[in-house]
Structure formats: C-alpha cells, structure tokens
Image (cartoon, rainbow, N blue to C red):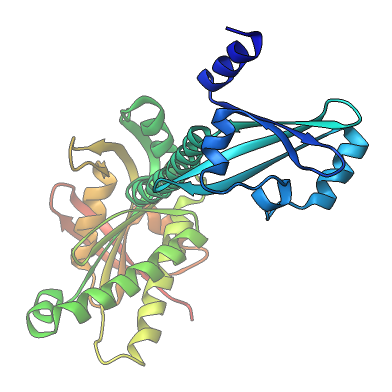
Length: 340
C-alpha cells in the first residue's frame, strides 16, 4: 500500500475531508473520499463557487492574500440531518490551496444544548431569586427585620425581653355584626385598606406592627430597637389611627369605629410555632393594653396612669378615675384625646 493510500485511509478514519485547489482558478485538483461523500454526491462540480454558492469568494481571496488563511462554516441537509462543516483554507504555496473540512455537527449540537441548559439555569435562578424575595417579604411582614436576620442566619430565634416598650391594642366596634351582614369580600378588602394605612402611620413613628387577628391590630413602639420616647410614639400613632378612620368614614358607606388601649411595660418577643410560625409578643404590657382597650368607647383611646403622666404635657388627657382591671387590680385610667 502506498503512502498516499495510507494517508487517505487515515484522513477518512478521522472524518476529515481534504481537497486541493488551484489558487488562481479555484478549481479542484484533488478530493478525498470523505470530502466527496459530504459534498459531491451526484454533483460533479469542479469549481469552488459551484460547490459552495453562498461562499463570498472576494472575502476568501482577500483573507488568503492578507493572512494566507480563511475559515468559515457551512450547513446543509444530508440524509434528513443537518450537517455543520468547518472549512479551513490555507495557502500551501503560490499555486495551491489546501481545504480541510471537519464535521462539527456534534460540537454545534452540544453547544446548543449547553446554551439551552444555561438559559434554563438562568431562568431557574431568576425564579428562585423571585421566590426568595417573596419569602423574605412575607417573613418581614411576620417579624421585625432584626429577628428575620437572626432566623435566616441561625434557623431559630432566641426569645428576647424588651423593657420598656409601649403597646397599642385596637379592635373595631360591631365587627362581628358587620361580617355577618355584609359581603365578606367587601369587608376583607376594606379591612386590608385600613390595616395598610395603619402600617404606614405606624412606620412614621417607628412602630412595629406585630400581628392582626381578625379585627384586632397590635403594634409596638420600642421594639426591636429601644426607643426613649416610645410612649409618645405610640400615642401619636393611636391619635392618627382615629383621625384616619374619622376622615375615611366621611366618604365610605361602612363606618369603621375602633377602640384603643395603650400600655407601657415589658414584653417578651419570639417566634412561636414550627410549621406555621409567627412572631408574637407576650407580657404585662400586652395584657394591660388589651384590658384598657375594653374600657374605651368607640373612637376613644384609653391609657394607663403611668403612661398618662408621661404624655400629660403634650397631649389632652382626661382622668377617668381608678378602674378595676382584670389581672392588674385597681389602677388609674386616663383617656387620650386629639387636640385637633
């Protein structure tokens, strides 16, 4: 077997098509079997332009003149399959061009698969990021940010004693009757609007909304970060809650009237529950605010005596006398009024 025959078999074995062309006329002088199998078939073209009509010969010649090399890719149908072939022209000498063709179909298919996979990973990453942001937003609605950061870092939340803080406890008068007599979707929509407004008002004075239970709304000043004027902050918040509802009732058919209790003292804050966890507070200030709210008439704010003395110089306070408060005994109770 001659050297040429051996070389031909090797070229065919590695799947490389080789052709030699006249540099001036671009006519084929030699083609191996692999080249003919890919491109010739029944087409007996002897000229490069006839075989590859889409090839820009001007660009080819220019590149060969400047760099003595030109590379390109072509794709075509072959037995119901699209083949992608890489073309590599090299100037062998002044009269001969060597054209080496390599089947890169599988490489292109793999590149396409990698691109598709990358796009899928990118989409999934964006989706996971959105879900993470939604979960974070949900958890921040359930607990203060500092508590959320602790939960995210350690997976648990250590119960903390906060002392002193001021607690606002609010509920609506006649809520049960309203729910029974009105369209539930309307009631929930209006309640959502009101609570959203309460949240915005509380944020202005540094209050942290703890939770809502039906028509009960609980917010705290001085938690999780200590606030020296927590009593004034909670009083301003309560007054503006009442002020907001009064304005709202002027333009809405459903009249929302609240009762509010304010108290200062200590509370313990922690996440409770395992599967359906929620951040909650417990302690004397919470219980006392709940008891004081029961003494309030519609659209009134009831305050414990210790808080009233702090607020007396800046707010209108009315002494309601001593009241027997369940769990706290007899204590002085005051009514907080809006100066406006």
